[in-house]
Length: 396
Image 1: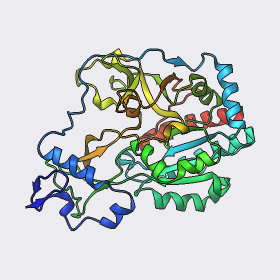
Image 2: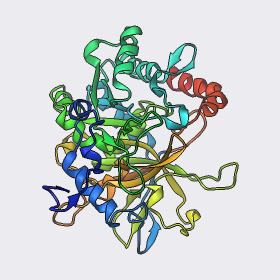
Image 3: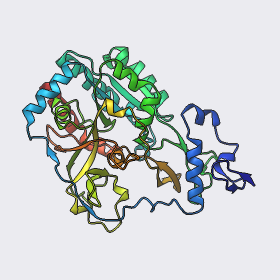
Image 4: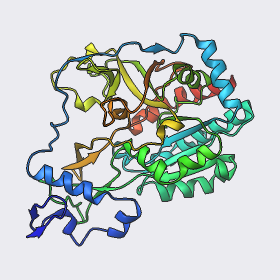
């Protein structure tokens, strides 16, 4: 038996971190949080942490005071254009996901249309904003151990997407280890450990730790647009930026009207709500009770956000949720943090760490802000729509 110095519990030699097959150099390079993993793994073993412990209990009500993007639109546009002309805006793109539904490829380098990848189109969006407003809009990529190497090679092969080298910044999120349902080490069909990026909630810690946040501040960046690499609807919009500025908030989350899918189920994802009468927040979808009527909450999260840079200079410690995945056609557990959950995180005094605002945006059409591509079939079905959407934005 081996003592765990953090929990004073003992584990036999099946403890995941005592397996000699682990690549400790890789784990160290990408910031594996060993103490937290040990704590969470012990909680899994003794049943304190399950895929159900994150479920919300208590009263769930729709969010109040959601701002519609058409409201006060011209004032928002003016405020956003002023920020862009002042060089105060950067775009952060989440490019660290494992793309399990996309065949495990580095999704950002996949061609979308006309020989251009998701990343190239994100780069073109920032370049066109620079041309329109006369100031740089840095493109910041949050990579991971699974995407960093291929992403940087792709950027180099495509001439930095015609952006000045100083206008592409990158940092990597952390790494973690998959487990079996009993908390033991999960190994793949070749008998090797399986690693994963532990959710995009890593953004808060990793952009600070990497020094990228400081670089942006030094350049005079005040606002960060935040989006998934596979959502090309999240273009650099002065109206969106301006609404954040006018709200005097620190974290603005774009939400859109919930719809039923072809199968009749409601959209899956985070949703704006008030929990037990508290202020607005966006709650990740898997945290709602199984029997909660999703139609009670009219909106859901696009995972597009705007942050005030100054507000990011603090420790943002998010809960790690236990999520079950299928890997090699077998159940595997992984620990994840979710960015939107920061909207409901409280400081030690019980106050929200961010002043939050919610902005309702259209999901489709020429101004649509939500075009996710989660599977190859989504890309095939939406190529023309994506091209039309981007050309409309760039033609303004």
